[in-house]
Length: 365
Image (cartoon, rainbow, N blue to C red):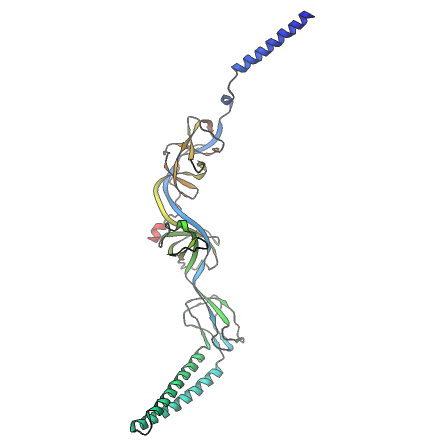
């Protein structure tokens, strides 16, 4: 029995020693970790633009409600919605019978007073009436002339005229209606120019100025970019909102853009030519450090970089990277410095960066 117990003890020690030796000679866990699959690309060069972007509705620069200035029945409606009209054009006519009679009465009184005034002037020249009586007659004549002019003006208000050039955007009146003073009859909208108003945070005030190029994208006109420019920048900051107003003026000779359409607006306030750029997704780090992973001989090395402008999914690299270095664009989130990687895509040099405003500068110079 003693011999049997001794044999089991020796066997157990031998197995434990073998296991320890096997653990000491085994490969390191890190050496066994497979390379991390990543996608890489080369940096590209091209123009990159500093852009302030915002959204706002399109509005008409000039718009006016046409109201009735006298009471009357609507006898004629001469325009319809969508008609182009010019300033002063007659849009509708009201019943003016009463006003015409009042004007005729005023004119008759005026003619009588003019004859009386002429006779009294002859008498005053002969010294037959006093200077005071003659001045009284002269004042009465002036009052009748004013009343006659007022009656003529009110009669002219029976013709409803356009206050501005534009199109009839809304018609509120029908033939046979009785229009009251102050009642809205039409709305006239000027479509040239159109404007949009951006309310921009005050930190951007030094960046924006009149005549800067603008690119506008409208949902109703897909795959189309409209070129415009900044017309005005407000000289004050609204203390309640901390913003200032930027007015963008839009020329649309083809009349495709309509007031009320929703617009995405990009104001180009600076650009760098032939800038080194990488996809924004390649950037890692935090506020203290911005970095990219560069792959060399199957190893990903973390490199700190300094960035500049950012636009259209690309970000400018000011320093810390060269044109020939392969950067990790997919798979960099889980990487550590000096991690082993395997590239799963072919790296090809890209063409120049997409120009976000293409011919914008030429069109606004």
